[in-house]
Image (cartoon, rainbow, N blue to C red; front, side):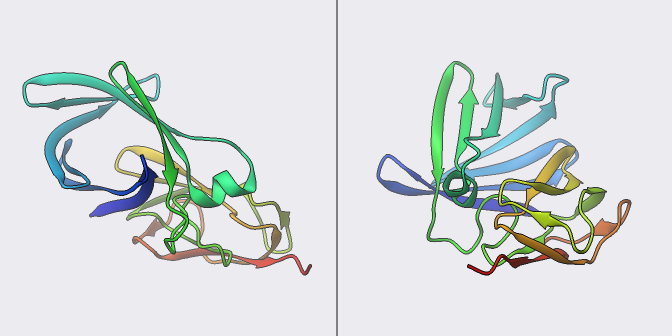
Length: 175
């Protein structure tokens, strides 16, 4: 199982992909670089990575709440004492927030649906969290990505879902 995302960083497109090997072992690809790491989620939400004989604490969190930031999937990343803002690549089909711009919400990876926060007929805005999926010992909040009306809820809390499995459909607001 793996998850990937493209970012614009320093004028260059940067592809980041994480593959789970087994247990707490992962292979992390950042551009042309590849690292095998052991990762443990810490109680404060950060992650501790061990690789090349070093232990590093890291965190990643979404940047901003505006529609543009949400659709791009901008991420603030801190590794040790260094910090970067990675701008989500807007040319990719995936937004980085586990939804396509067309309102089809899918599972970001194989996992368990923890919460469905909407019902059919609910009005949502792009920044609304509509579901939470647990995968790789992390909770992934899935955002609506568009303003609209929930027209289908295809998953229930407790269900095991595959990567890219359809969870929710949102029909855009007519303009």
